[in-house]
Length: 101
Image (cartoon, rainbow, N blue to C red):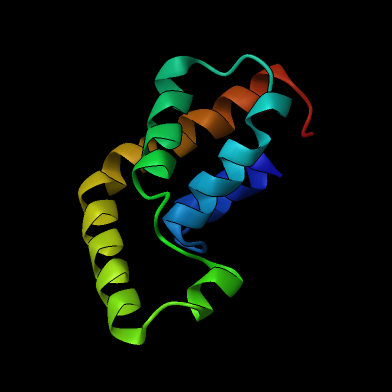
């Protein structure tokens, strides 16, 4: 799953925050991933932990939600290059060191 997510990120096929959240949720099953790869992904997830998704987003005021998504997009645009590098490194590391969980 993590390798597939990294591939989708590299192809632009998934929201970057969704990808970070998915990898963070799997991190304890991924084994020994270098901190230089995992820490930035965890940091982005932490920085944007107040951005709602799914059913939680439905509970937000529309204007507030729109503003939160604008802030999220601005932040992710600043971090996109670094995150893409992390996801490529994660994919390469997992492909070399362990079977897909």
